[in-house]
Image 1 (cartoon, rainbow, N blue to C red):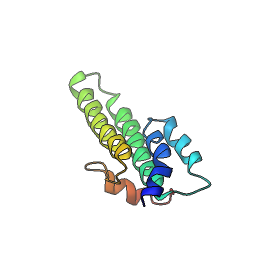
Image 2 (cartoon, helix red, strand yellow; image 1 turned 60 degrees about the horizontal axis):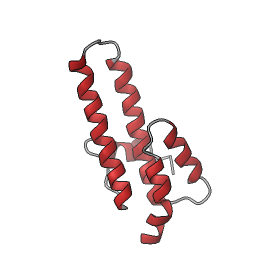
Image 3 (tube, rainbow, N blue to C red; image 1 turned 30 degrees about the horizontal axis):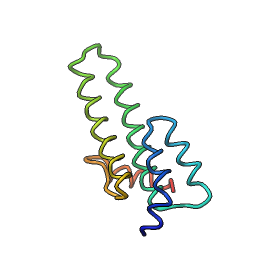
Image 4 (cartoon, one colour; image 1 turned 30 degrees about the vertical axis):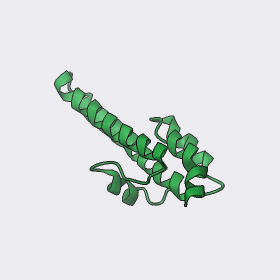
Length: 108
């Protein structure tokens, strides 16, 4: 497992670049499927989709009191995910990580 982790670590870390990073990591992982990279690609894609969804909902309100918690929430998820990828761990992000793995299971 350690060799698999080291092989997929670059793609796993890349997947946490919000937006484009997920697609870069998916292309990096397209030929030689790596379970570690796939796990973090699903986590990164879930965080990106959460960021976009919350941003669309909250954009209708023009209040820092509403938008600041969203930014903090996404920042906590992102920092937890990227730290896990750097350490070589497959811990799902808090609250939503297990759902990301279930909902995005077709991505490998």
